[in-house]
Length: 376
Image (cartoon, rainbow, N blue to C red):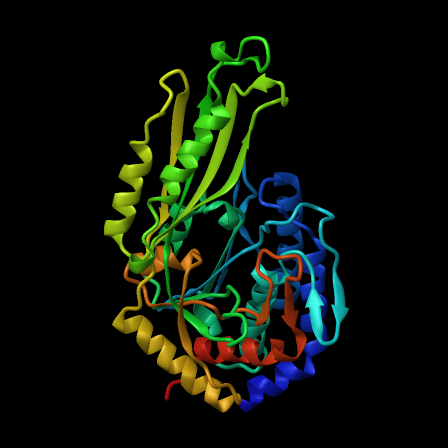
């Protein structure tokens, strides 16, 4: 581990420069041209640092997915990471202050992708085992729930001996993520009847009033004692103050710790009925990610990470978190999966999103050690 850590320390400036380059290629999930342009930058980094080209899976509505394969030996180690972000182009700026590097998607999770590239490069350059059987799966729609990449990830990860997800570590503690909640997304579209709010309001049927009733019904599905959350994150409707609203829309996020709760929520949401029969309610969506549970094999991966971390001066903990990732899919396939192996920092999906620069090398070395087969 000392050789790996020394090599990476010697190239700390290069790693940071690559992170800045990838973050500067802004990639909001719903902007396919921008995401694909970011994907081209990512391909350049893989070509420059690892001398490997992408196997591109084109997408019509989302960014293209990128697979990078090194060597042909087995067993396969799979590294998963996404390069889309929640930020509109120009919404955040790249800046460095007091040892923190800020920027759109830098923590979630472009720094993690760059760290993974350099972890493998370190093994290559030092002629250490582990890099000859690595597959990178870099998808473009994770922030949308991975609608076009779930099956792609499951297909290419199948049979992996170990799966490493380079999402960020837990903020504050730096803990690795050993379990995650399952996630779901739903859209409710309400169609009412417009009318003049002063002259003839009785002829209207307010989609906004109905929306309020549906928000209350949705939030009543929360069950904190079971780890279940339902959140109406977006509510919009109407056109003008003096018009009875004839349209409204809700976007709903769900989180569960069990398949039973996922089934309960899905059934309850899909069976919602309008309180006002004149308002039409259209519901779409699903529980998109199953819960990620820690299996015995995944627990063994975490134990190895703790051992390697100790050699690097890290005291690592494991945490169960509410956010979902693409590691949920591989864990559900029974593949040993360890998450949170990306950068440390804080502010995921927040305007102060940042990484801690001084900890980039340690975290990169940790992943390299796991790939090399380092054991207690």
